[in-house]
Every structure is written in C-alpha cells, then in structure tokens.
Image 1 (cartoon, helix red, strand yellow):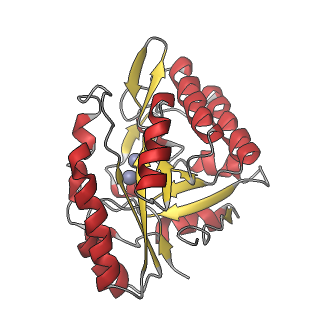
Image 2: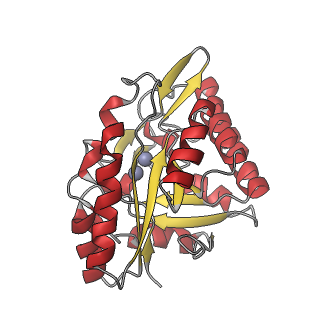
Length: 266
Ligand SMILES: [Zn+2]
Ligand SMILES: [Zn+2]
C-alpha cells in the first residue's frame, strides 16, 4: 500500500498544478491513496487579510471540490481523499466542522501550525521562534489543536526547527509537550519531506534541514504510543509520493506508522 496524505494545488499561491496533475503523477507512480490537503481559506468575518499569502480564498472552495471530483472520475483506481491543511484557532472550529467536514464532506483535516499566539501577538513558525517562550507557545498551540479531535494528524510538528537553530533544553521541553499530547489524544505526527527539499539551514552546529529534526524523532521513538505518518507535502506534481527520505528516518528510529486506512471510508 503506497500513499501520500499531504499535497497542495496552485490555489494556495505558492504551489504549482491542480489536483488532476498530482493524480496523474500518483497513478503513474503506483500510489493507492492521494490525499489533497491545500491550505484552508478562512471564513467570514475572520480578518480576511490574515495569512493571505499562503492560502486559497473562500470563493475557491467550489473549484477545489470540483477539481477533486474531476480527478476521482479520471483516476478511479486511485483513492483520492479530500482534505485541507488548517491553521488552528478556536474561532475557526465551527467552519472546519460545519462547512468543511459536514457540508462539503471533507475526508479529513490536518493541522499545519504555521501561525500561533506567543504572548500578545500571532507569530510565524517559519521565521519568528527565537526563545523558550515562543517554543512553548508553539507546543501549547499544537496541543490545544490536538485536543479538539478535529485533526487527523499533525503536519511537521517539528517546524520550529525552521527558525530556532539549536537543539537544547528548550526544544526538548517543547518536543515532550507535543509527544505527550500525541500519545494522550492518539493523534499521529508527520515526518514531512518538504523540509528535506529546502535549502539546508546553516547553524552553529553545522548545516541541517530546517525540518524534520533528527533529535525530535529520536525522542519520539522513546514514546511507545507515538504513531507517525510519512508524506511528501508536494507543492509541485513531480514531488507526489517522494517519501523515501522520510521513510528512512522512520525506519532508522523504529517509529510505528499510523493506520489511516479509515480515511474516506464511510
Ligand atoms: Zn505546512
Ligand atoms: Zn503542506
């Protein structure tokens, strides 16, 4: 069984191709499951400018639905799941539950914790995690999202490595909060291959991928209840199913795959 539960489309403004292009590559590579998880739009009256650069507009939801429907018809051998990569904020839960999951029959939602509150303001995980306070805020926001039960898994839970360079007592504290909650709430964590396709980060300890963070997954392996999922996070069709490198990380630390075969089953 080969699957990829995390891919994008052009609608998020920083990816190329539509669902049909990703499905063509998935079918050609012999995948069985293709999960489409573009970045969610925000409902009205949510400040419409928030996170504007990295997501689709609300008016594009119909075309997203249609693109997935068309690809399902064109590639009946492929199980194409309708998903969304979502930011977490408690005020967004009704939109996720009622509009996406109930009305539009999304198969699943995943958490992409790219923005979270630290102190009085929202900051971006890609560039603005600079100290313990931000790391703990990132972890607590991730944990709060897990507790809702809305998200099928947590995308790149080690995204903080993109802006916080060191592996130290603070990253360990942050990681343990996330791992404890993953076990308690039975939410799988994703080893995300997109970070491996990015430019390495030059840190004082030498170059490393911005994520996944090897020590994060080494620590995860000491939690028997942790389950993981390995995905491409493809932002262009050619990257669909490219999970060899993250599968190697999973096997190196002996991490157990989550069973997501229930997704899309009634
Ligand atoms: Zn993401
Ligand atoms: Zn993504």
